[in-house]
Length: 60
Image (cartoon, rainbow, N blue to C red; front, side):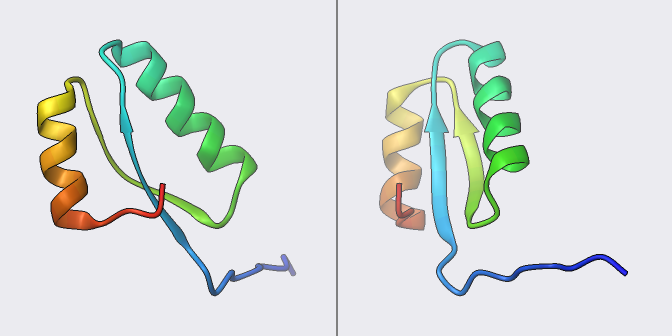
């Protein structure tokens, strides 16, 4: 039976990078190596990213 760890302090993250491949790599890396970081969404431009940062209030 697998053991599943649940972290009480989930960190919400929004990734902003103009290159799709960089966003994909960062998202995959975080998903594979951390259990307490939740990538909410990604953006290719700063303007859209900042708007959602204000709305979603991520931790990083």
